Amino acid sequence: MGDRHAETARLLWGPRAKPTRGPRPTLDLDRIARAGIEIADPEGLSAVSMQRVAAQLGVTKMALYRYVPGKAELVALMVEAAIGPPPAVAEQPADWRAQLENWAHGLLAAFRRHPWALDAVVGPRIMGPAELAWTERAVSALDGTGLTGAERMDAVVLLVGHVRGITQQARAAGPEGSPEAQLNAVLGDLMRAHGERFPALGAALASTDQSGGQDQAWEFGLRCILDGLAVLIDQRAR
Image 1 (cartoon, one colour):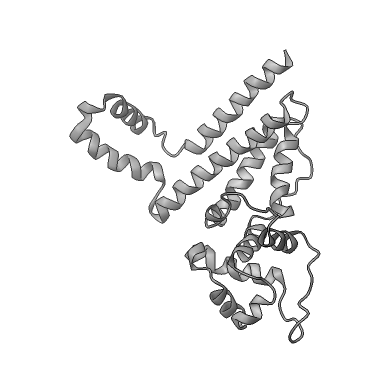
Image 2 (cartoon, one colour):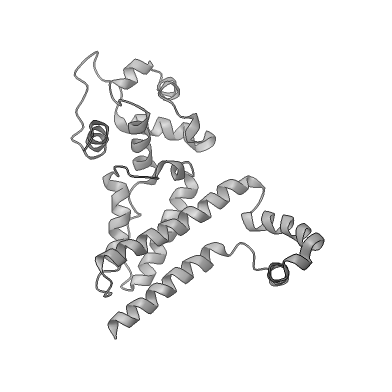
């Protein structure tokens, strides 16, 4: 593990050593992460810098470096604090499907609160214990289903991909309306002008308008993924 990965792992997993140089510590990693989140939530991840976070905390940038060596580690701390562990449940449903539905809705809510995290949770990286607990819960929901370990992990990847896709669409749409409503408005004009070239798409959009079935991509996609898992699990049972 490289030095930067090792430092990220230490910051996320501990033990969290206190700075040994300089004056008595006035900050902690949780405060630093929250300061970054306060910037990223309204402005996005690109607005976060060591200088901005230091100013948010009322310290110098050099003082901040005594706790966090750089922006990569800062973002890792922000993700861990923003996503947090999965919501506590007094009693988990026995059914794997209900567990995964609850899990997916909870993860969607976390990303909707902090859409900038989408830009941070890409590529090979070190995850913290809270974030890793999300994967643990989803994989454990599929225990006893007959799926292999690789299949259970792949199922989680599918669900996370769906959550990411829906969150990205909502972020792109902004506060003006749902992605589907905006898209259909533009496509409607295009279909009126060029509908003869795309008859299947025109018919589908017309049907959507008549049924009022807009903005159903989240539930439809989640249902398709879980239905597919149910078929595979049933095959294994037989």
